[in-house]
Structures are given as structure tokens and as C-alpha cells.
Image (cartoon, rainbow, N blue to C red; front, side, top):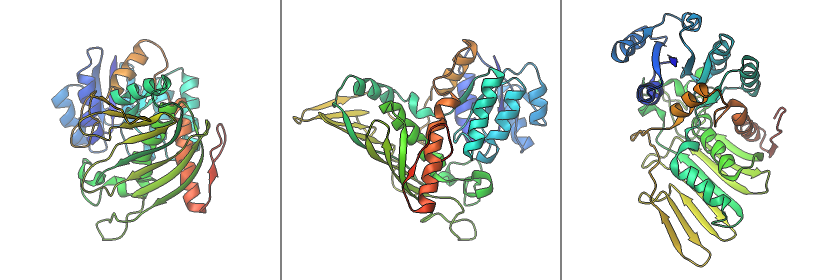
Length: 348
């Protein structure tokens, strides 16, 4: 399988490219980036061609699949062009910047008969997969409420072009801030863990602290706090933040009828279960990835497997649609100052 990498920034360099190189079933055929020198450097380092345009890459019949690692606003256009050119696509999150674009991406993938996978890597974290098993087994009874958080000090220290001018802060390129960068991960995760969709949201999506190079508040949100109601009646909060300056938080806590489950809340144990009787059950499984500590995500291996085995991926675009609906509904809720219903298969 030969892949092309579109967008050669940080996520491509620390995750996609190293994980493709580690997979014996893949060869990187080439790279494209608007910064031609960056693509050239990667081709010299890892092998493969530095393409002059995405069109040139899509026209190359030797390329079977692509990773779309460009800025948010270009996800849909790049993905749709790739699918129409007959390529399988792994697209970074957020899937796209409008619900209409997300739906079109799914439709184009179905029309082309190609894999469209979205990089929702939290589903592949070992503790999240184990937690899902434990929940199904009734380890904490029926889940009643939850709180799930994802916060760190912001993308400006991690971006390939760090600082206050990061594209993450540019509304034209990013469209959304912490909600799209981090909130989509935890929205997708809670649906995955509980096998139920978000059907209602009451949200505040705001800009509180992050400033651009001119000293003004950035054009996208740096904090989002959402109250989600799921189809199965479970209620909880999802918080996404770029202003956790002291320590990254990627925890999820589930409160059930027979106890509490804490996931990635304790640095020593990936899962802690506290039963109704006060018994503590500890699971030493792994530790969650952080910006400073990158570990193998599992996303690339799943994408490669889906393509080579001619099957749907575990994070197919159609499966991520409702999480994106919840994100857009939360933005609408914050803007309107009211609770918004998430309508599956329709508009927010």
C-alpha cells in the first residue's frame, strides 16, 4: 500500500509519518505541503516524492491512499478531491468545519467505495477500550452521569509554526478552536464508551484568555463547557480547554449505580473503579498520550488494515457524523443561549 501525506505539519511529522514507517504493509509514496521546502525535506528523510500540488499526487495511480493533515478549513475539499480520484482517505479531526461538508464527505466515500476514516485516536487508547468492556460487563452498574475533560496549555507551543500566529488561532483556517481541537475527541469518546449518541446540548463556547500577536483575544474559542444528554438518558459534562497551563487533563469519570469509574485520572493507574462499598480496583494498563509524550496511536494501523482488508474502519466517517453534529449544536447553543437538540440525519 502506497500512501501520500498532504500537509506536512506537526501531526504528520509526529504521528502519521512515523506510524506509516513502522507498518511493514505501507510505503510512503510522497508528500505535499504549501511549504514546498518542508515536503522536500521529508521526502529526503523518509523517501518518496515531493509533489508540486495535490492534483499531481491524486493523478499518480501508484498512490492508493492519503492522509489529510491540512488546516481545518481545507479538510472537506481535500478529502472530496481525493475520494473522487479513487484514493482511500484518513482525515485528521475535526472532520470538517460545516455539517454539510461532513455529510458530503461521507456521501462521496460511499459513492467511491473507499475508506474514509477520521483520526479520532481516543477510541484506540487501551484504557478506553478496556473501560468500554468493563461498562458492558456492569462493573459500575448503569451509568447515570459523567464528566469528561480535555485541556492543555494550547496548540501554540505544539504547532509546527509555534507562537501567537499559529493557524489554530486563525478563524479563516481553523473555523473553531478548543471545541474542534479537543472537544470533538471527548464528544466522540463518550458516545463510544456508552454506545449512545448525544441528543441534546447546553453549551458555553467562549474565548477567555488566548491572545494573538497584536494582544487581542483570538478569533476562535479557547474554552468550551457542554452539558450533554445522551439517547440512553445519561447526563454529563464535556469540557475542552486551551487554558490548562499547569498540567494536561485528559480524564473521564463515569458515575454508575454500583460505583465510579475514573479513566486517565490517576497518573499511576489508567482506570480506577471505586465500588459502592468503597472497594478500590486499580488497572495498570497504559498512560494517555500528551503533546509532550507521543506514543503509537493505533490510528494508522487501523486505517492500513481497513484498506488492505477491504472493510470499514473502526472510525468510519459515517460513524463520526453524530459527534460532529453535537459539536455544531453546541456552537449553536452557545450562540443562541439555549439548549439545542441534536437531530440525527438532519440539520442542527
